[in-house]
Amino acid sequence: DGGITQSPKYLFRKEGQNVTLSCEQNLNHDAMYWYRQDPGQGLRLIYYSQIVNDFQKGDIAEGYSVSREKKESFPLTVTSAQKNPTAFYLCASQGPPAGTSGTYNEQFFGPGTRLTVL
Amino acid sequence: DAKTTQPTSMDCAEGRAANLPCNHSTISGNEYVYWYRQIHSQGPQYIIHGLKNNETNEMASLIITEDRKSSTLILPHATLRDTAVYYCIVRVRLSGGSYIPTFGRGTSLIVHP
Image 1 (spheres, each protein chain N blue to C red):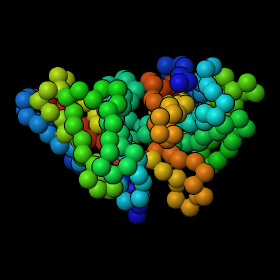
Image 2: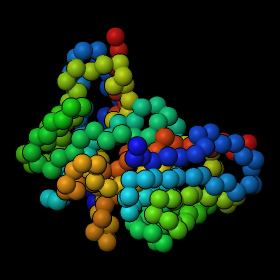
Image 3: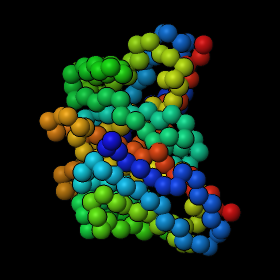
Image 4: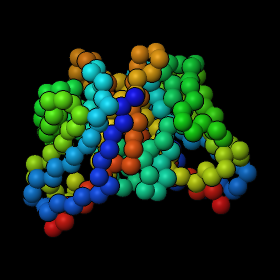
């Protein structure tokens, strides 16, 4: 089964600790994204990567870091510099849907990680 | 970059059609309109997209006005499982030529029995 996975589903951390959220995809997509969602809000872009070994800051990158050493993986680290890290984090990849001719791309989202900082 | 405006919330009776409007008056000629939905505490799911023609798939229909400044997502026979937040987005074009979608607050659709 092709898809995008995130782990863990729930994560609790103490204030001041760095934490890394996992995101893996086996869809062979070049582009991957991290979003943050707060209650009742839309998705805000943290970082995105259009290709391996390259990534760009999104709208709210401060306090976060990423790496893209492999096509399949795009981990997000929430650092102690992030002032309000408690949120729902969503990872996505973008590419043509399976079985299509590649004339359009859509985003495929993982199930999300809910991070709570105590 | 085009932005979208959607009502904050709507409700619909089960079995009836749900019509979700979206305004995108600053859309440019080569920008597609995409619709996603997000069921509580899950990742958003793609529904449908279009450029200027009306589109239909197994999930929904998309009606785009002739001037492309607005669109309507139609769920023809809403069920309780269609209760979700629906996002209308126009993809933001990056300098490299690829796109990223930007998600606003969307419309919270509640389907009631």
